[in-house]
Length: 400
Image 1 (spheres, one colour):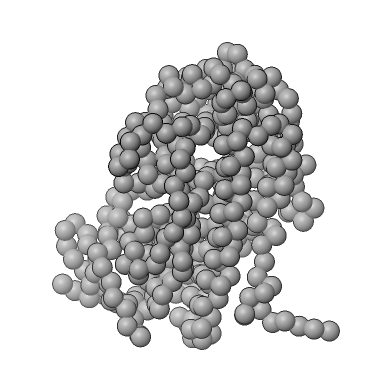
Image 2 (cartoon, rainbow, N blue to C red; image 1 turned 90 degrees about the horizontal axis):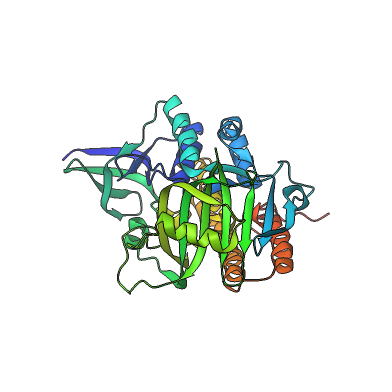
């Protein structure tokens, strides 16, 4: 069994791991990035990039590629009992300091492709079908065992970063607690081509006892989501993020939901993605130990309200990336890495509070007025432009 060396090993090639890789690559840090999946997922998953994350892509020189693959969300329309009752233009929720028109709607698969293409341009490949088996760390390094094609490989690295999702093996092996709870309702999701007389913007359909949100994906495709009472028995979950349930909804079930709340004549033409999830609200007790750190969904999971998971993971990676590079190159002491958790974990907690509040308002079937006010308030938070690290230990406190 041969032994290889690298400065940093990134476990997980989702958007968090890929962005971290791009950040290290442009700072000339040697690394490897692995993923146990044989290919990248083509599911949309995370949907939408907010302003703070767009600034990160602009800094990486990738903003134009991202914009070319997506489109700007123009507004949200609220239907009550099948009738349009309120439209909220996105510019009404935009703060004066926001340099971007609105939320950029782009599927996670496209975000991953932009980042992968950037790595490929620099001669870097994601090592797929490569799985982390175990690791142990000392004062000076992390010793890792990888498995690929049933062959084992030993690797020594200075730092190990787990960007390996809610069921993170890195987090589990470090013994980091992932406390929280599972919501009693299930999250029903469909991605479908629609036939209806509606523009390509976001919709919330509200009825007496039903609630449905539609988010445009382009080309008459929409993501349709609803919270429903769970009829799933305990222990009947698949092994995937948030617990994907075996009893996936049918196209007929989605059509029945539409028939309750959407304008008459709304029709599901073709549904390619049909899923049910048990959503969780969890936050890691620590973002790292010793020479090992975690980022993205390995640190925090929450309802998908407001496209917060994708964006928070991107910002985790950006924060950790420059610090790792500075320490590896010898520009800064290792203690700099302690600021990653002290800066990012409070943001993770803040995001959990925001998404829980938004999800709870859907559970309670809040009225139109509450939804409109809440939408304006939350959009000003979801773009993360209010996030700062002024109280961080590494920020100088200057007084006149």
